[in-house]
Image (spheres, rainbow, N blue to C red):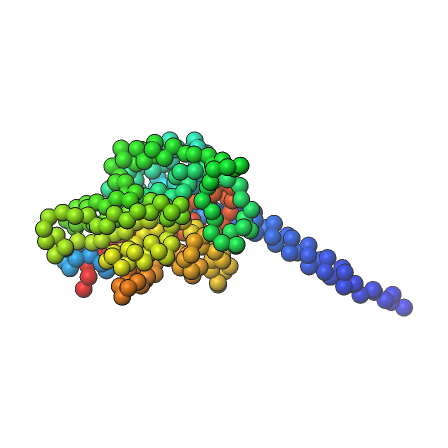
Length: 316
């Protein structure tokens, strides 16, 4: 007579489910830290904002590189971006993740500095990241470094900016400047990092009488896309706003998206090209998901690191 088999206990079923959940979690962490954070992507966008009759113009938007020495995959990919031959490079900050990263970062960006560029800093161009409980991001935006028990590690921001300047890139830290590129006048207005409350608005460049009637494009540049910054630039007539900081959420839920933006930007806007409205005006805002991660949290999930190539065309 066949022997009766004992049905698995409820405890055994729960234990098995818990084991599968742990295995899945370990697999996700391994994937996010070993594969996706180095699975670089190029997002392509198109905008018709140039003066009528203008030829297409390409802007390469890079952000949140968070470079550390020894990141060979990231170095190779950054150098390969020069093959795109952009008409302009816009760097929206958080370039560093280590005090010794400046020289290798400038080497990695060397080919891109053969093209015109502008830049603004992020908090990790001033201070090296410190370890922070990853779950604390769900409680709200990270706090700016402060003196006291946990003294922030200052970075050589001046050396970084000097390197960019020697490569021909224009510093837009609380500054405005015009550049003539491919026969088009671009008016830039940039701010220091809003995450550190360092932004001071410089307005738009001032030049010859009647310049507002001449064809031009107004481009605003900031690291962190806080709503107060987007409101100001939109109301002030920006044709395009470029920002980073959010890492696209860094850890996303497939089919849902980002859980956090690390600022007051709605999470559904944490990555991509969207319109922003303020005081009856509208401006397109491109928020980059960024190229790197903090070295204290080297992980991405459902949010690949990216650079963005925007092809600007003439208004119809």
